Length: 51
Image 1 (cartoon, helix red, strand yellow):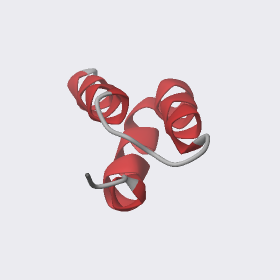
Image 2 (cartoon, helix red, strand yellow):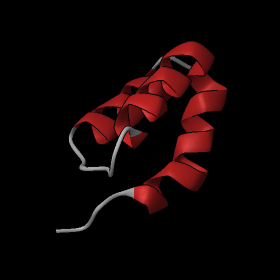
Image 3 (cartoon, one colour):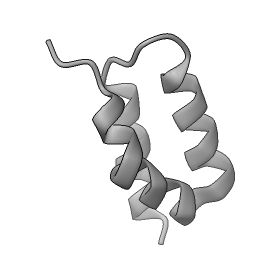
Image 4 (cartoon, one colour):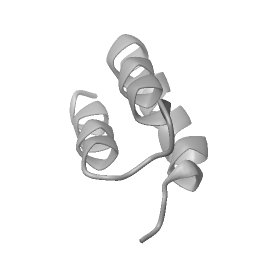
């Protein structure tokens, strides 16, 4: 249960997002742990900026 939020945080912090999306996703994962991680992997990965 602790590994999924860590993987999500590493992915968020190593990616580029527009505006404050990165901060919002970090807060969601930190405060909601597993549920926040699932939300990020289902919705947040689509918000990344591709180089």
